[in-house]
Image 1 (tube, rainbow, N blue to C red):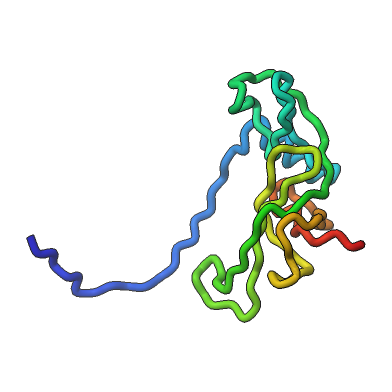
Image 2: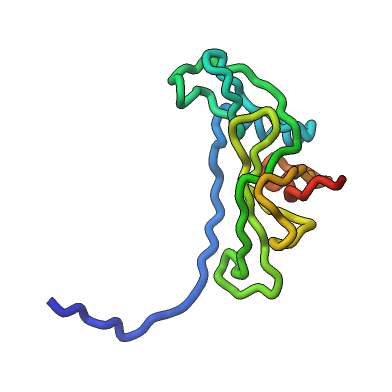
Length: 151
């Protein structure tokens, strides 16, 4: 069966606004981030794993016996990549860099922007720290970016 080619196409963009619930763990995480500039995780009382982002159960032990703990706003760069395209597909002159930073005292990591460094300056395993936004709103962008720890 041969498909009929459309006679006309229209290029355009659609922006969709939405609201979503971050759930119990996400709500506490974002509230403490916004109000106190604290990074909170949950520790499994059975296996002692500290999960960041926090969860209400441990996917290793399948238990919901969790306690809230604060973790450092510093960590280690696990991986990173640079991108020369914006989220809408337009070419950028200067790339933005995303990385995964495993926060000290946790078994998890946050995916976020890397700032104050070029991809050439970054090395897997290097120490990183959070730069917080001054006016926080209660979402992940309250963390402006991670940057290399200055000696």
